[in-house]
Length: 511
Image 1 (tube, rainbow, N blue to C red):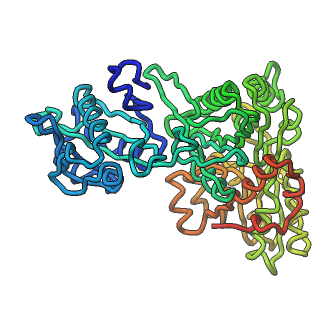
Image 2: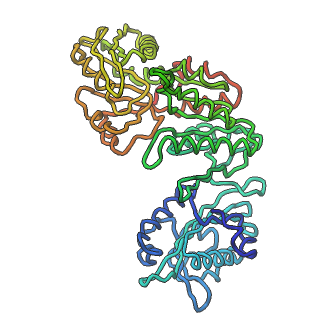
Image 3: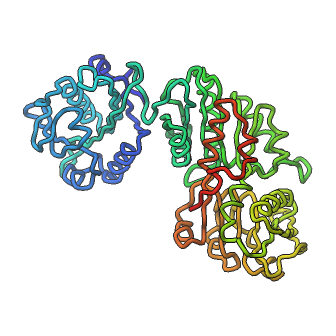
């Protein structure tokens, strides 16, 4: 929680913000907090001596000198040196040439020793030689061998302010730039997009309460700004898709309430796309309900990649939507290894036939050679998958099974086995989204599939790293395309032109 309201007025005057339940946005401070928590275990605080050895290189350590009401430096850091001028082990905090910062830190350290919990503080460096700096400082208690709190483990990040106003971490946006946020696991993708646009990802705050509720808010001003939110809407770890969706909706609402001129959500993988119509009496139509939720909180535009059912996606939303297919990206990434080979594109189920045909046409144009097609029958009912019909010619060919997503991999495996039975020389599985949920480990090792290609719309889970390292799993990068999409939306350009321009420089990156 932000705690300025519960501390005494002299301390409040020293800090712009004090958070007694810290969740740092900066990676270095977040890692430092994780290290402190791991070292603490079941104790009140980690032992000072152990923390000195195990803390990351950017951390500093002070030990309290209770007799002098001072703190002795046990381990310096570059950030602390820049802030206080202290570099020598054994130096006293009170001896810092930056007296105002020394007083500020002493008061903060005493508060932490009294409370016994870590604190994330923010303050400006007025009076410092770099007067336009804003400091984000994480400080946490350390104990002696008897469990008494006697020291401080800390780390700080210094950043530039904007017009004298404290700026949140990572953001240097001007009024003519889009403001970019990244929720969930979208950090790496959003940072690459921001880099290509010449800006940085803006910081936001997330806090989870003990009862499972949460709050989320931007930490930069968004009034009259064009905001783009990269959202991860697939279950991962302890966060379900429902948690992430609820958090995203609240964040959109907070942005609109903060007077953002326009909010665009970029959700490369859009959840609840597979229940877009009624197949049984009284079935929900989840895609439509999802659209109503986005509309209710004020979303202006939703961008997604390879929707499960394009017609359902386009018909469900009443506000602006942009759909990005990856046919050209995948075709150009695959083309070098398909040169001189006979190729067939296979849809693993009847519902994906249109998707497969569009990809086949794109691949045929890029290869400048005929590409045949095939279809595997599939029917799902009550959790059971049936269907044995196979139509098309894959004999002696490289069969590319194309779908929008890979979850457990069951659909892809069925199609790959059918291709093998009908004489395919090689089978490549390709999909925009690698969800890789329960059972996907077996799919990644399945011998009926030679290669698996996915886009980077979702991070690769840990169990898939082996397949990635071995070259069995390949990833097509989308940051270039998404950066151009953000640029087009921000400047009023045409996204259709981007998708139709197959020879674009962002259409061939693969790793």
